Every structure is written in structure tokens, then in C-alpha cells.
Image 1 (spheres, helix red, strand yellow):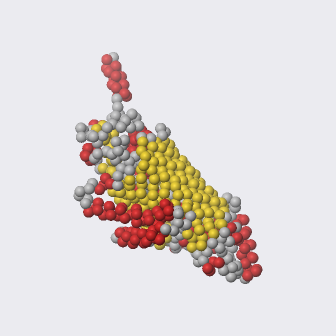
Image 2 (cartoon, chains in turn green, brown):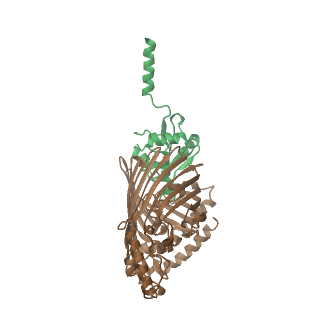
Image 3 (cartoon, chains in turn brown, orange):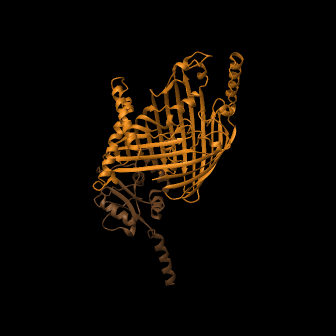
Length: 140
Length: 453
């Protein structure tokens, strides 16, 4: 009886716990938390927002299009597919109307680049975060 | 690419000269000024800065301010009949696209961008490098829900979903864009303009509204003359009149659905040469006049994980004013459209199916125009003994089924192949093919290898 109850509790806990591979948005430690909505995040990762409210340039970092974390980030945080972002960036880059983000090779590089770049924004797995960067509490 | 700096330098100087003479002449100063001045004005600092950035790469974190990208694509085109992009009926490699661009951020609000393009495209284009765009982007307003600003210089016209990057293989949905809307036979008329365009991006709760539009001078070249005037006349087409372009594009839910409406209005002057003015029947008896072209495009697209559906329709209204009665009789309204379905087996492998068509709205099957052509040939023969082969009905429309696929070998490299089953020859240019004798039913196979960075 006790064992059955324990199992039920465990299953319930699993159901309500955060997903195993949660991604978290990170910014340069000097950045205020801008409380970004999904709409703002889409605009930022589409490279359409050149500067933060304080006037400093926005610097976007992403992993490669096919990187599993990038794919999950696009789908769950932005609600887009990687190819859609690529299409938007390409249209901007090859018509002169905008630029594309800086592509990094790994989460470790992501942490380093964001820690050292003012105005930087990117994402890592939740358990990769360390105190060199600031995690955003985003209402998603 | 070692020609790039030399070419740019030469063009900068020649355009500076052009600016001096233009300075005192007319009152359309702002845009006319941009037209003569833009290349030197926009490019000189860009070049200087990119060079200085390269030299001081150690000191400046240049990747923060400067982005350099490029592309290269080579296609093979084989048609059963008719010439399209060179001697395609024997197999043609005359479709090569090369581009190199740079974007340099002067400040968070000001950015310079330019691209050099070389395009070998059968008899349409000989591959000589040209400035595809060269602009200053001033981002004047920014709030969490809006960004807005202006572009100044040579700007790619935002027409439909594809015009702005039409020469970049990776941004197209096939080796060729649908010819029913994105005519390669008269590419330069609509591809870009020299002037000013304003833009505004509105970030709404459920989507993004992107508006861009402005005024500038279209680029009229020989392809425009062949397509709209039938041949290369002694006179010239000149782009002395302002053209207007505007597009409203809405991306719903992060671009899951995209809708766009584009309007273009372009006027091109025709200056008849002495030989063109010789009265009929010894000559064509043309006067100087103008071509007025209005173009409206409706676009819709669905972007799913596996499926992508795209449909666009374009209405074109062309009028010949004051050139001759026979040109005035050629005024036409046309409708071009396509529907395409793409399926992603994986992000790397994709297949597509497309139907595209182009028709004269007032003469859907081209028969009335063909009848007039037969009557005109008979008249010339009976009265003047002039032999003119009449233009058949299938010169006035085209319909095609296209299927193909692509493989992203890696993020930079892409291999493509596609097959077109075509009825009608309106997509052919008199510059490449003597259209009255062109085959009505023809097929086309094309393959391409494209690189981007």
C-alpha cells in the first residue's frame, strides 16, 4: 500500500517538475533584466532590435542551426523553427537591411562570449549557468 | 575577388564627376543627388573602414561591427527546345552568381552596407561586377514595440517574398524563382532603386508588422528594352523619373504564417534615336515617350516543421505613352501566379512541387494577340512586301509544373536539381530566342551547386 502510494507521488512529482532539458536565457552580467516577452525575444533573435533601452548595442549569440539546444530553444522559447530564423537572417544579410547573430560552437564558448561582451544575449542549458553571466527570468 | 577594390575606386571617381555636373541642374536634388553621389558617398567610408578594420584586427573587435558574407552558385541548364540562360538546348553552364557583401556598424543606430554582384546569365547578363546595393541604414526610433528608420542609397526593392535576395541561391525555393512573377528576362527593372526608403517594424502580441517603402530611380537596361520594346532600338531607355515601391508584410505567430502586399509604380523614358524616327514603312516611325509599369503582388506563406506552402500572385499593368500607335496597341495587363509546396524530410533534405502561370488578363490563351500579329504580317506583306513571321498564341502565356529538391550538404553548401514541364514561351526573352519560332511545349532540367558564408 505504502509502496503504491509512493509510486503515485513519484509519478506526480515527475509530471509537475520542470522539463529535463530546460534552456535559460543569459545576458552580460552588467545588463538589467529587461523582462522580455516572447514577442520581444523573437524581435531580438530575428536581429531587428539594434539596441537595449539603455542605448547599448544588442549582441546576439546563437549555437549552430542544427545544434540540438538551438533547435529546442527555437521551438520552445521562440515558438519558431531554426530554418525560419535562418531565412530572416539571410534576407537581411544579403539585402543589406540587417545582420545575422554571432554563431558559437559550444555552450562553454557561449558563456565566455556573453560574459565578456556588453549587451550580449544568448542561451544555455539551465544547469550550465555559472556566475559569470546573468540568467533572465522571462515570462514565457 | 581581387578586382573589387579597383572597380569600386573607379566607380567612386566617375560618380563624383557625375555629381559635380548634376549639382546645379535640377531641383530633384535629394534623390537625384543620391543617385549620382551614392556610390562614392556610401562606399568610400565603407571601404576605408573595412580596410582599416582589417589592418587593426588585433585592436578592434571587428566582428562586433563588421560582418562580411558572400555566395557563389553554378547551375547547369538543359532544355528540350528553346534558349533560356544561354544555349540551353545543348546544355548550358551560363548561370553563375557571385556576391560579396559587408555591413559596418558606425553606431548602434547607423550602419553602412554594400554588396558587389557578378551574374552570368545566358545572353541576359555577362557577369561584369556591379554594385547590387550600397546603403546607409539609420535606425531612428526604437521602443520595445517599434523600430523604425530609413535606408538611403541603392536599395533592393521589397517585392513579394523573394525579390530582395533573388540572386542568392540559398534564399530561393528552387534554382529558378517562379518566372511568372520574378521575371529573369527583365530582372533589373524591379530589383533595386536608387533613392530613399522608410521602414517600420511593429511588434504586436501575435505577430510582427513590417512596412517598407519609398521613392527612387529604377534601373533600366537592355533587358528591359528587349522585353518591353521587343528589340534593341537606336534610342535609349532612361530612368529619369521616380519610381515608387511599398510593401506591408505581416508575420503571424513568429512567421508561422506570412502575408504580404506589394505595390510598385515605375516610369521609364524612351528617347527615340534618329534611326527609330524614320517614318513608316522605311523605318519604325517612333517618337520619344514613356513606359508606365504598375506592379502589385500578393503573397501568403505557411511555415510548418515539415510542410511549407507558398502562394504569390502579381498583377502587372503596362502602358506605352507617346512612342507610336503600334506600341500603344501593345498595352497589356497580365497576371502571374504560383503555388508551391515544400516538404522537409529532414532539415537537410527537401523536395518541392510548384505550379506557375503567366497570362494576359484580356487574352488568356493569347489567341487575340496572335490574330492581330497574323493580320499585321499579312498587311506588311500585301502592302510593302515586308516579311514578318507572326507571333503565335503561345508567345503570350506560360504555364509550368516544376518539381525538384535540395540537399544541404553542410550549412554552407547546397546541391539542387529540378525539372520543369512548360507550355508557352512568355518567359523567354527576344534577346535569347526568336520567339515566333519557339516551341510551344518544352521541358527544362537544371542542377546547381551553391555556396554561402
